[in-house]
Length: 219
Image 1 (cartoon, one colour):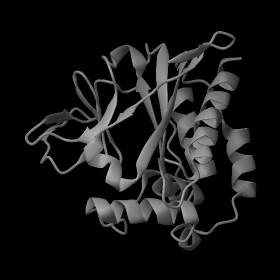
Image 2 (cartoon, rainbow, N blue to C red; image 1 turned 30 degrees about the vertical axis):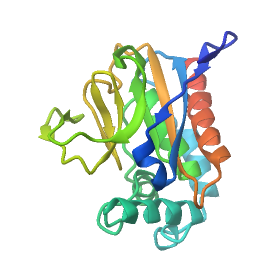
Image 3 (cartoon, one colour; image 1 turned 90 degrees about the vertical axis):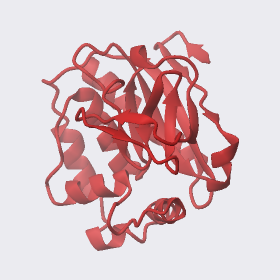
Image 4 (cartoon, rainbow, N blue to C red; image 1 turned 90 degrees about the horizontal axis):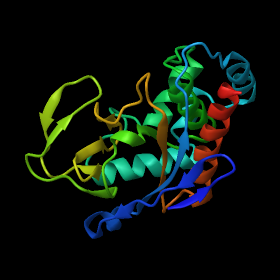
């Protein structure tokens, strides 16, 4: 981990397990200090985004980034026409005027994801224990999602996990344990990219844009 003391952001390494490398998926991650707020309004940013976003809902599925993500889903055995990539789903909701508003941290990640079409995950770093690994799930491994619902994984899923268990199940199921809460003070921002069809720099752009928006909400 390398730390930039000027703004308390740091690069975070995530190990990619051998058994998932054939899927050609990788992650870019940074940590930062935050204060969770419910009173920040991103309306101006969202208005500018709507003016710039020229894709229609029907065009989204043919965008190169969305196509790469959809192809990745097919390799996972997931039908992307039924379960869309999270960034595509967010963009569709945004175009329909149904953008969810949560807080300044989560909303920043959603905006950056719509702008870049890169899936973004945000986690409470205080709740992340030990090394992070992108790996296969363990058969019968427990997962408690962000709603508090418990389930058992089959062993076929690709997951992001720490030493205490799964914090994310691909394609878009986050764990309750590491979700952003009102008292969260340091977060991990993770951008997902597919090596076939996506430039790795795009994940960095998405993560940095998330951080930029959060910083603006705190100024």
